[in-house]
Amino acid sequence: MLKTVFTAINNWRLTRNGQKHFLLYASAVVGLIAGLAAVLLKYLVHLMEDVSLNISGHLFHILYIFLPAVGILLTVAYQHLINRDKIEKGIGAVLANIKTNKSNIAFNNIYSHLITSSLTIGFGGSAGLEAPIVCTGSAIGSNIGQFFRLSPFEKTVLLASGSAAGIAAVFNSPIAGVLFAIEILIGEISIPTFIPLLIASATGVVVAKALYSRQLFHLVTEGWVMNALPFYLLLGLLSGLVSVYIAKIGGSLEQGILKSHNRYVRAIIGGLLLGGIILVFPPLLGEGYHYMQEILNGNIDALKEQSMFPDLLSHPTAMLVFIACLVFIKIIATGITLSTGGNGGTFAPAMFIGAFLGLLVAFAVNQTGLMHLNTGNFIAVGMAGAVSGVMHAPLTAIFLIAEITGGYALFIPLMMVSAISYIISRAFNPHNMYWHHLITEKNIYPGSDHNMLAAISLTSVVNPEFTAINKDASLNDLFKLLATTTANIFPVLDADGKIEGVVLLDDVRKYMFSATGSQLKIVDVMIIPPAIIQYNKSISYVMNLFDTYGIWHLPVVKDGVFIGFVSKSTLFVRYREAMVKQHKEADIFLRE
Image 1: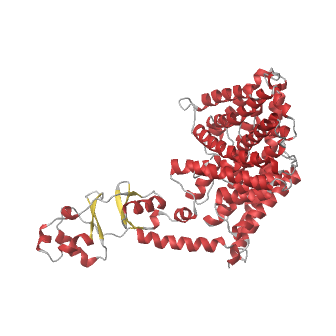
Image 2: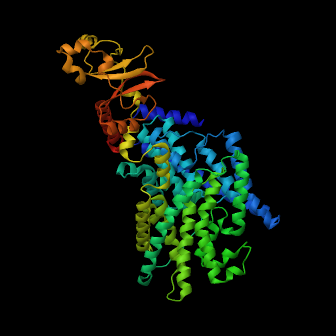
Image 3: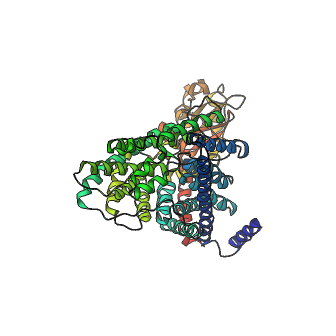
């Protein structure tokens, strides 16, 4: 039924004047479905949390440490036995699909993240919902684009629209959702791109408000005072340094631990290790939004809940140490959760760490008696600082907290702390943790240049027409071939079609009217190419080789057999064509 409806819509789009504004209509549909997905995910997580709390209420408290292991084990079992390891975890996977797979994301990612993240986080895994909902929303946008056979750019816009709607629906923050898609996924701003994001984000929020009004948390802040300005600057400095720590530790742990064990043993050991950490530090359970809401309400004593040493935490010094431990151990707990098989993200952990870093600064200053700082304000601003530094997304951080607080009373501190944190983080890490992994591990780079290069396939620029020659042939044989070809480069091939070298016309021209030339063989004048390209390599890789060696032609092989040359000048022509095409696609209001 649904497929029939979509087919009818696609026929209308192709046969009538529906192409011009189709992306706007599609973005609304993407926002609607992504909003529903966000509502379902929040419901599933809260359901799993209630189930796990009921379980713990009927068991000895010490047995509660086993619940994270249960959640991670169930997640791993689903991925292995049902999903068959087809799920693509993390925002980095979304970025990789944008850059290398023309924004095509497998259909199973629409539902797999909902199931696995609710199991992981609902049973106490120390991670966030934001990465799963971004992956889900992105998959929704991508698959709608694939169904209607849209261009890679249009699929990217719908993909980003789905992620914007998901973030907006989770936090009830439509502007933050749009800015997240721009800063993290698209990387550039244009009005024609901005409009579909706005439509999808607003639609997602409306759906979330209509169906599930329960918010993750609510902040009530007061205006800031000038006397607190030095401490906001201190918080910005600390946020930047902590962001570097998060990226370093989180990135290292997500590469995997306990790799020598099979996936189920790794899930059990990792879950039990996580449970032990949560036993000592109960606020690390799940996303931690419950404890964030409590400290925002001024109820710091809530940190004593479920604690093994509540009397000790009654002392301010012990409480300070406990809060500091939460700041530094949260990312370790998240890393264990994700690296041992759980599904979640680092967005919520970054907010958690920022919130408790802000609490640490305010609580410490208040204990000195020098002045009284508004704890709620510092918690809110600390969240923005951590998100800005970790994600390299200062605008998202600023407007997310501004929208959650319901006003702009803290706008100046939010701007200052987010900017300082971002600058410090960028000084240590030129790219956020998602791009750092893609660059170092997969040679995938951000930027529009790489987008346009990714739109060009290597096979489309390989010239399959060539005149081959054997290395034992004489140079006179080559001169005879010149009358039948316009080529200025000749591959030297063996009997199996494998390349042994190349001959450049410029190198042998001096022998054409020389007696020396008749005595030379091809083996005497051929050169070994500085690089040989496999046919499945990316155009970005090829361009890097051209820039590295300063040459204009490179041979391409498939299964070891030479298939043609790729020319730098041809690449320039195709790059220009891709650039013109992308600019035309980008302006949805100029379409016929």
